[in-house]
Length: 315
Image (cartoon, rainbow, N blue to C red):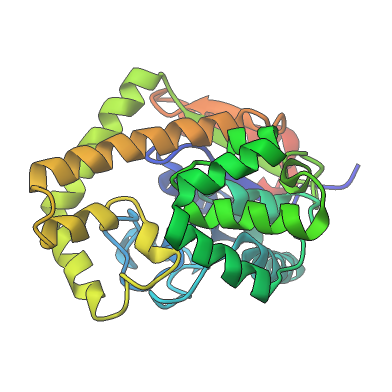
């Protein structure tokens, strides 16, 4: 069996993945090794989107190098296929230098793209443009119903509100003539050996924790941050414009909703997103789950490394 030289910290939003990633990197470094963080949160790719993505500041990174953060402009589109092409050379480059890559994040498709043996179907620009026009005319829910007719399993896994995913699913269905569900990285055949650690806890606690987190983002200045990104093109960004929190902050700025409603909507959408994340991650039998409320959680994570990849700790 090949040695494990890749770690991944996954799970729902707001569970402390970034902190655990830093802790594990420091543990490896303190024992004579080298480790760096590789981001897999798709919204942290964007420069200027800091508060609403809970992006660690330079100081908060505690001297640990981070990759795939602040690599895109607000108007740029982000796709899991492109991420796969970018992140795998980074991972292999770190490993070639004796550095342990620690993949950290909760963007489901992006994590699967990095970790799983999976090839994305090609794109068709003309068909994509046609489908995007239909999206504008018909709306994502109507197009989602079309997916449900063609591929019920895929429809059950795609949020009807996510127009971009809906369009991509229809593009694959029409291009390949095969179910989109078959193209989803549902399988967990690893691209290379990996130790996955997942963070979660009882649902009621996470619900409250996420609500407090959203309140804190508003207090820290999310609305002002969103306002500053208007000139950068956040309203036009295919990916960034859909970021939970920013969309609501912009609606508040436009006078469409009150601050109270903006916060309430963001809380609701964040909690719904966390449920979808858990539904996705539960299918991955490689994940070793830890309770983020457990005082011994960090120590248990180190124990998992010691048991599965002791060479990373100099053992």
